[in-house]
Image (cartoon, rainbow, N blue to C red; front, side):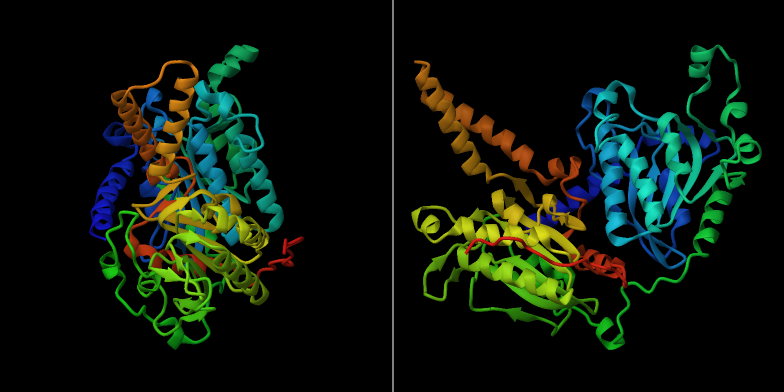
Length: 535
């Protein structure tokens, strides 16, 4: 996997640039206002030894070039711990467009809220935003998955008993003002402002002249409107107050492992050596069991139906002592029980039937599921269709759709076509969906897609009476392939929220351990039902 190692280094360097936000100019503005940057606030708020698992760092990547870069969509979010308790933090980055909310900013916040809801994590909002980015307001304002959904979620979280804390540490204007006030606890720093309409809009609307502090300053909201619960002199004081309030929450024993000897288990192979498995070019042959030996606990694997449906590996295992069920594409050479050759990374009727049964068993016993995707799609052709490949695939899609246990998906290679769906792609409600830097995400591979699109254009040209020459065909082929390669790059998908984070391969076990530790200990999964299954 030397190619993956190199690509990981390249992406990590790019992530360092994204974390600079608005750069020196934006940071200088925060300093002039006597404020910390969003990342400094998060670092001060979280436990020093707990780590910060950032989500959505690639949001909006190269999506708003006409308006300038919007690193991380101007919002920083992720999972960390405060006073030893896991939580999710969402912070406006005022160094990026003054914290204005772009369409992808809204989409990112909604996904972060969704993750907090699934894991039942307390949420802390660090608010410092100029509000909606007005030139794109038509993509932000009215729909069911737009800006207003954030506030709806605030209300639903509160009703469900999921703690929410908001600290106003800069601007909080217009509709965005509802977010902190819909939270359980509201803090505000001196020099910050909270109002539905800024002074200029008040003047235009009703002709009233009013100073920002009188209209919506911390002193006014603390002493007169009563909107703010705690008024703090500056950022450090506010963050200390947040930590002390968080410490009042009841203890949370989620993710505890009764047997400490199991909890201390290590993987069979060093996660840092995972790069030795294959080249990461998407065509390599490797045994996914070797990959998983760097991820799961040593001596914890129990492979389910090991001799049947070989292009999918299904197994029970432990990660950090916690039980999981794993469904993973086999990229090694395979043959069915009847001795027929099967292509690694391709789904056949026997493999998906096995996986469907395994998912049902995990729901029966309440074991979380991990899907490892390196899938080219379902087998095609006359024999496949006659074997009922669609019917078998529909079973797996059905049980994954109706699965009630936590689901985590990691894309380690290709994620193409209906294979993405059947193995718990984004549309199937994974609690977290992560990807390696080499991952590809598209309806089909670039070779197949470029040739399919090219053939359609050639036929269209022939129907119009202008057949294409060889040079023109080759130029068109290269153009289509280049476009498709760019769109299947995992950064393209991450920019649009199709994955929550791009992670280095050797961090896979660490991320899965975080996810499993964050699952609530006492949760009602509901009843598992599949409805009609075709036989």
